[in-house]
Image 1 (tube, one colour):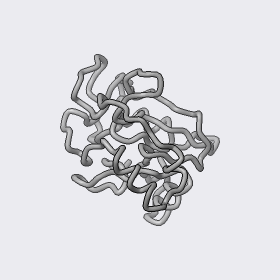
Image 2 (cartoon, one colour; image 1 turned 90 degrees about the vertical axis):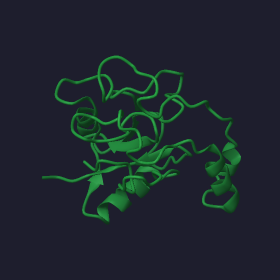
Image 3 (cartoon, one colour; image 1 turned 45 degrees about the horizontal axis):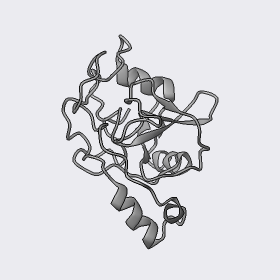
Length: 170
C-alpha cells in the first residue's frame, strides 16, 4: 500500500475531486490498483485491529479530522472541471500535506488513513466504497476510525474531499 494518498508524495497535497473510476485509472497507469477495503482496514488498524491508526482511544489533533464543515455550493462542484468548480473546491479544501502529521501513522507506516481526504477503495466484489472520512469528520458527526465506511455513493461520485491511494499485489 502506498504510504500516502495519491499522488503518494510526502509533503504534497492529496488529490481531491477524484472518483473510484479516475483513481483506478491513475493507479493502473502505475502498475497498481485501488486498495481493497479490508486491506485498507488492516493497514490502518494493524494486526490488533486498532480503532484508530494510533490506538483505541480518540486523540484530538493526531489526524486531520477536526476541521469545521464549510457550506458547499454543490451546483458549482457539479461543473467539474470548470474554473468555477476548481475555485469552489479550493475554497473548501482543508487537507494537510501528505505525512505532515507524524501522529497519524499506522504501525505499518501508512499515513493519513483517517481524516484528511476520504479514500476510494474496492470491495472484493468489485464495488467501490469510501473509507476513513475526511478533515471535517464523518457524515453525521462521528470521528473517522479505521472501520469508517461511506457506501452511499456510486463509483462515479466525486466531491471536494474524495481522493484515493494505490495498492500493489505481491
